[in-house]
Length: 149
Image (cartoon, rainbow, N blue to C red; front, side, top):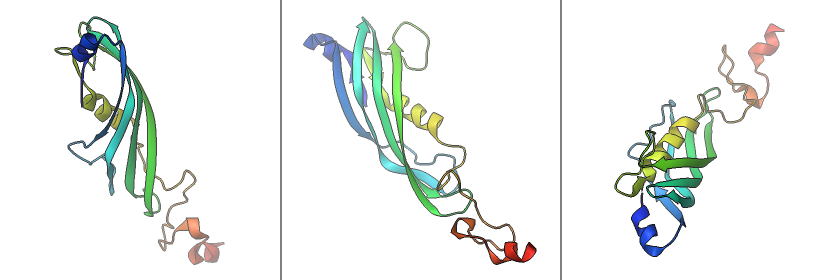
């Protein structure tokens, strides 16, 4: 998604809202047995700060679906991440204004990468699998643990 700041200047506006559904080139997020559920949804507003720069505010909503890294249960979680980025045509930085345009896809891609969890859990207190018999300990104690007590 490209935001055209020149069209805002021509309309005499200083801000404009946006919404788009985004399909990244890859759904691979670096977590084994998990992937992005597409599309990724993004909404917010662009506010012109001065000639050649703007602030992007909003949120990126994405869903990850896959296996819990502890118990292997099928899991789906929605992540809502706020974005607040300055895009400038003059300064060095990750998000630049080039030819009066801002590439929101780059901001969304990096927001997703920075907010993917290191481990993907079905719930925060997931007990995982018994290392002896493989039973899911979230469903209760397994027999091998009871025999060892």
